[in-house]
Length: 437
Image 1 (cartoon, rainbow, N blue to C red):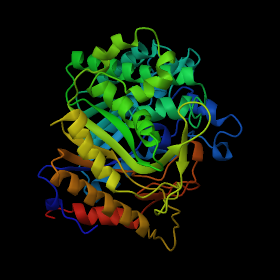
Image 2: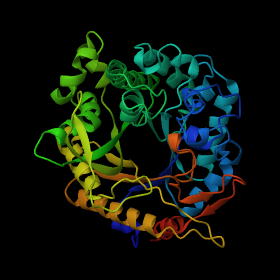
Image 3: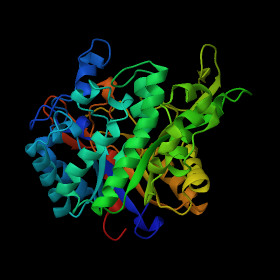
């Protein structure tokens, strides 16, 4: 990571990202119960049944955390708001929740950090889950009400807004594979959740446009798909994971390879929603971590089987494959977004970090960032309009069903004392981003 700012385009944005439930401490400030609290309380769902009740206590320590951001020289902080903090029952505003985000955004602005807001990063209020959650078409209207409530308070100071982080995780991972809340394994629920999450995205964009909000984007997690045999399995996986969501938003269509399996389970007249889903955006965010090698599998649709690869792995068991980031940036611009600005809104790795004598020597993470930043440079050289990069994550945090075991942070967190210790990777970013570099 011997980069300088001048190695990237003028005004290129460097930031770090977090999410509300993973760091704030959901037990504070009158926040309501979420489906993640319910999921974690169910035996077998989360490592040691860990939850986000305290997390990193960012709720009380955000000034310290933002000082670290500013000290490193980052330009922007990508954060999320908790629907259940702002509206504990999903519909009624909690003044203390709005007050917290008011203070948080003011603190970013005071430190010269651009606030990049993600409205929803997976913490659906339990009261709305009881009504069907993402399976219920009404979720689009509920989400628009939340959007209007939070932006009426902080919209004047945020630099950029995206509605929903990683639609694939909200819908497929959570309703088909059952690995995230609400923990379903139901193809009909999956089809409806996939469609409704995009409908909610578009409805929120329209609500924000009506409020005069500027710089609105969408954030999609993409996973490169490599063929492990001569079948169309890799293309099918690509269609489900990547092209369904990008296609819905930017081309107002779903891939046939997905409709072959999910078509019978989509809601009636789903095609009529594309004008809302495809409401124009100002930018597109890509979250990228890894790739999969896919082959034809047995059993019901989608007939997929993952094949192991010889590539180096992160602590998550994910392939380190920076070429996928380069290819996605180029392909997204070519096939979906054209000249629309692209941002890498998440990229990083989990590592078995050890704090020794006050130091975390996370050389493998430094190598990961180095390779992926070079992939960004290669994509820019190939013509992709990439204008920023956000590292995931600022802090070690609650890694959902994996509890507190997997560490993604630039800053080490002792989950007993909550002491923050910047890692070697943090120091590398600080050196790269120092004034005059």
